Amino acid sequence: MTRVAAIDCGTNSIRLLVADVHPETGELVDLDRRMTIVRLGQGVDRTGRLAPEALERTFAACREYAEIIKEHGAERLRFVATSASRDASNRDDFVRGVLDILGVEPEVISGDQEAEFSFTGATRELVGHNEGGAKRPSIEGGGGRRAGEMTEPYLVVDIGGGSTEFVVGEEHVRAARSVDVGCVRMTERHLVRDGKVSDPPSAEQIAAIRADIEAALDLAEQTVPLREAHTLVGLAGSVTTISAIAQELPEYDSTRIHHSRISHDRVREITEWLLRSTHAERAAIPSMHPGRVDVIGAGALVLLAIMERIGAAEVVVSEHDILDGIAFKVAEEAEAGKGGR
Image (cartoon, rainbow, N blue to C red; front, side, top):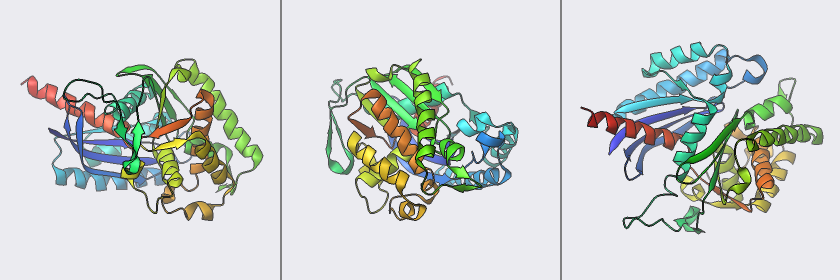
């Protein structure tokens, strides 16, 4: 086992995973996994710059994470930054701040790299083998329910704040594409008027979001054979929150959410309700993180549009995503380094 730390800094949230990883078997044991809403991408779509207050929120989370990493004694740390920092003209300020606090430079990765990490994290256990070498025929669903067989190829969809990644593959990535459609970007582009989020949005605003999503799906299909997938796997906060709502959980419970399944009809029902609800009604959902209240409607609409485009009857929800993929990669590199000494 190798003890590693991985940080994923996206448009809406920054997340930390400290874990013991066995790179050969794919076993990953969480020691600490947490998420902080920092909204790093605040205003980036409009200004092209990271806002000072967004940077300070992010650096405050980094200082907290530095203490946790030190307490657990992680051997290696990798910090990956995604959509918002790719787009910002002042990303050097972000890089210097992270380096000062954590001692590593954030890797501003490409959309394709982001997609590959997400695919590895989401599917490593699905494509794993048992001790006899045979493919595992099924896995346990959220809350102890049998989820049934996960058949290849997989389409892994990571709906972030600023972008969405699409990856099709079996044991390895076959095709990937990142497009600039995410819950924060769509909310800020279409739902904010005079500094306030429309509550609820108008039919015209929803139609504008849907048009952007459909255009992004057209773009993704130029590279990724979306409709060839047999299993749709959904990642990130919009999808996991929809699962929590679908299950009517009294609080957010990752063990119930991981590998749960949501039907297309249930996703549509929840999306329609979110888009006609008020801020207060969404905030009253017990499993809803306060930082997602204003952006969850747009995130749900992205998921629904994807399911309708590929004809998916259901989505398999994964709590394992880009963060786990980063941790696996760090562990593999650490083991390779030990072998070279």
